[in-house]
Length: 354
Image (cartoon, rainbow, N blue to C red; front, side, top):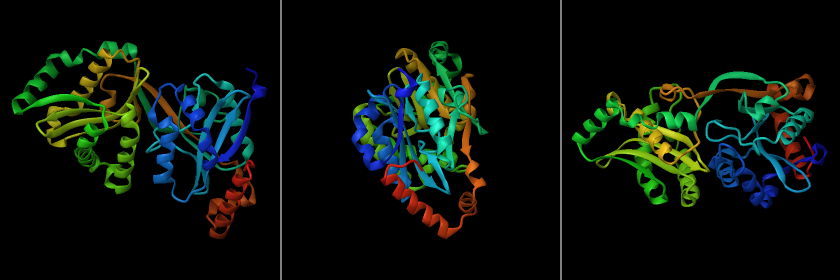
């Protein structure tokens, strides 16, 4: 398909509602295939976290179908690409090998002259390789296993170390590993999972998002939307009526993504989190998964089995500051910011490129 057949345009979130089927069809071509690429996730995210921020979407299509979709929201004087939960993965949807659409995406952002931020771009991904100027590299990394590592590590649950851990837990009571996939089963354990997550991250520089009621509601909405469609799973280690460790994730088309994980710190000497990971690897091997994605983050447990590492960077287009109106934006002049947001909303409604 020739590049000249591509057409890029900006639309509002309301106008994008008519493209739901095309959006989700394109999302199904993403690899890894995560639930947060789907249109429904963007709707939930916008409802809870966008607030009153203006939203616009960059759409690129040819004469036959949608080729790329990228939602942006305006905050702190910049247009920021929407990203899941903590900017773990940018919500830009396209076929992985569609270099023409990605090149058009970067070209339109460059030509817009607007302040733009695109977070967590993998250096070796199509999006990263075609980025015109890489921007700021961060310490963020994405860690993942391919089928080769999954097959090699799937037997770890049978090693002497983990057998001893399992025997110790069984002496304490009714110990079991559960893979929960229905809405009712996941919601049953969600309150305990949230408590474990809060306790696990309470002593770190980045406390758990579950400390905020809005995030609890956000997760509940995700479960009610995606669990009935078998898009969410909760891998859990249970001792009696108590949750020892849990991992909320997604599994589809041979790919498993580990979205949120937590363990009971009261049992940290008995490594419930590492034991759960061993169970997940064993289950992944049995299910013949081809990809296990830890998502972004460099927590020590992710490095235990030496997964593949993808370094990430953030793209920032700051050339607009050379103009006087860009400097006013940067300095945070209140009357100018209000005027700019009003003008932005007007231009989006009229379909123009900002």
